[in-house]
Image 1: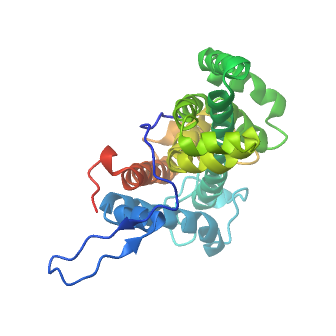
Image 2 (image 1 turned 30 degrees about the vertical axis):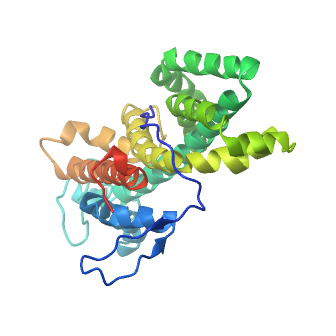
Length: 314
């Protein structure tokens, strides 16, 4: 489910790049750290800045919004079934009397948690597997590549659907783990290719000749030089995982009742989308805003970290 990013290489973190001299020629060059350069490029991407603002607003709504109403996601108001938005029910009421606002925000919280944690675990697995395969080669490389090829051909949705009845009633963490297990393979291939290139560099050879353990070389010299693609991968994977979890929950294979996610909220409201759109509209709109904002942030980060991949300039 991960999308491969362009393979690029960054200078070591300690390298400093001179700032651009002002047009008037009076400003002295200023040494900018790599982090400040990335931030500067990112801030020049208006779409990325807007995406951050939208994402912050979504997080604020998800975790502050529930305190603005006395209704809980599992409360019932039988006197206002299918009522539209009002001062008491901000998003209206669904077909069984539940507050749509409270249920939507509860589902948004769950989808954000699942998307974030699953994306982090996915990228961590990809970083470890790809770097080990690329650095050690031989049997380890063959084994990891074989596992990657095997997982790529397995029908992940079908496997998740089969396991859902067995694990669904316990905790939503199982969904995080399963989504991560079926999402790391493409990124691992990218990391493996980068490791094959980086392991031949002089500083890696020098560390190896000095007797530095292989795992230390990977942790100190290889992974830091691939941190940029890993950061972008986490960002992209959040949106991908949210969509995957929403799809599973929409069909009843994800987060199980009595808990809710955006997918289960939309799934229960699908039959009313045309007759009572308020039941479906707000959850769908938040899902689109969440995925779109994460996607544009990922694109802006990619261009900020690697100027050659887009139009960002100093």
